[in-house]
Amino acid sequence: MTPADQSRITRDIAHLAPIVPVLVVEDPAHAVPLATALVAGGLPALEVTLRTPAALDAIAAMAEVPGGVVGAGTLLTAADVRAAKAAGAKFGVSPGATDELIAACIAEDLPLLPGAATASEAMALLARGYDMLKFFPAEAAGGVAYLKSLAGPLPQIGFCPTGGVSAANAASYLAAPNVICAGGSWIAPKDRVAAGDWAAIEALAREAAGLRG
Image (cartoon, rainbow, N blue to C red; front, side, top):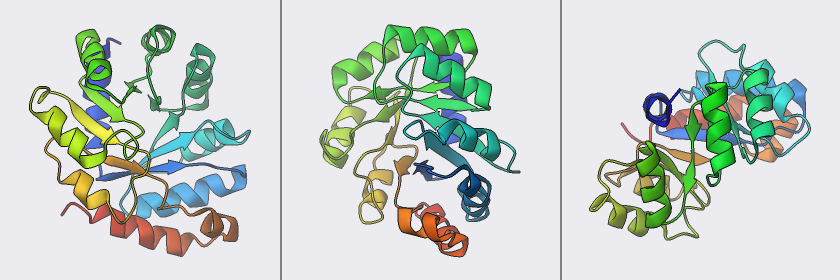
């Protein structure tokens, strides 16, 4: 799978909903009800970050939830890519991009949403065939104003800003001409997940799904 093929797939996934929940799953038992609530609320694309021992089990469980498209976030190494693909991830997300990571995603046929924080990083990825990128860390790297400034010279690149995106500023990001979707963790608050309050999470997902009417 070429980088261009990968970007076509990740762009299609990005168009599924305005927000991609960025999930840190501590307990594998939460995976199915969490994914079910998010999908029911209108957010089918789910990013499970590889930041906990439960992450791969959560991906495997969520991959069975009808209507969901589950990806693995915080991919850093080739081993991460292989483990994510084996667990059932349909796409991968990385905070940045390395030759090793890109080669592994090509070898494993795992569509990658690679991270970029500068014009040079975005140009380098575009030169390799990636035209759908994660903008990370969004707020710290310049926020909406920076993204809008990239739209002029690099109109062919679509972005998914992540990092500091919240319910308060998500609409501003989504209004940028080069933003396809945004990633955020506020849809699945740690306390609501721990309490098993899936109705509250579904309600938050429904609000997020309506951000771009």
